[in-house]
Every structure is written in structure tokens, then in C-alpha cells.
Image (cartoon, rainbow, N blue to C red; front, top):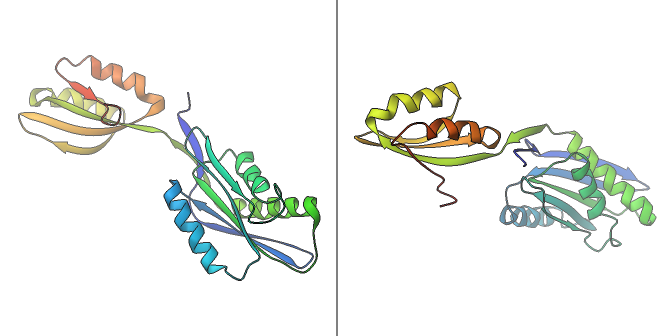
Length: 202
């Protein structure tokens, strides 16, 4: 079971030059395909004078949602090597764009693949890679008399409280790291009268 993933913290840039061609690369943290589409449009507009704007991305903690794009380069010479650099670092929620300015000398398929690989690698080398825990959101509904028992579990386990409302009937929304899920839920199960629900799954 996947309970964490690796991603990047911020936008970074890299570059690779070969026989007059310049490959300018960008590693961008992303969350979904809509965001990716917007970013790609912006880069194509900004670098309208470039010969090619190629990219690859990976999304999701399970690393199952990905795409490569060669932008008229020979098939497999651009997007695939870019994705290879994302995979070699086991990253996700990342988009890597490589913009090529043609220098007048053909590089051949192996030369192109190497250039896109090195450009992507340089961009990823310039940013910080972090490991993030997958979290799940839960709603807690309980009588006010149970507040102290619940707060003890929350404080003892450093649980993040997202929302709260205290009255005769209380409500809290919390986030729990997936790797700690079973332990913490078992503690909540021991509090009679506490109702725990996952709003996303129910």
C-alpha cells in the first residue's frame, strides 16, 4: 500500500547545449491535468520562436497517470527520455518541459534522446525533492462530553484539525497520514458515541 510519494517543491530550470542546439528545461510541480494544460499553453506562447516544446508528466501517488509528447521530434526521442528522468527519481505530480532551439545541425535519434534526457535531468537537479505523506480526511461528530478524550488523541498523535465547531453536538474535520490511519482509527473506535466518517468515500 502506497502511503507516501516523492515530488518537487518549486519551479526550476536547466539547460543543455549540443552542436548549436539549445535545450532549455523546466521542472514544474503540478496537481492535475487542467493545471498542466494551462502551463503548457503558457510555455508554448512564451517560447513561440522555439522549434519544439516537448514534455512529460507524472501524476498521482500511485504514479499511474502519465504522458509524453515529442512535438514533431522523431518518435520516442524527446518525451520518453524526459519521462525517464522523472521515473529515475521516482517522482510524481511533476511536469518537465524541454524547449529546443535548433542550431542547424541534426543530432540523430540517439543524440536527440541524450539531449532531452540531460536537459530534463538538469532541471530536476536544480529543485528540492521531498517525500509527502498521503493523507485522508475524516469528519468527527460527537457529544461535547467526549471532547477531552478526543482532544487527547489528537494532541498525542499530532493530528491536524482542519475545521471545528463546538456546541452540545460537536464537529471536527481532521487529516490523518495514511501510514498512521489504522492505529489512530482504532483509538477513535474505543470512544463510545463518536462517529467517524470519511466524507470523500461516503
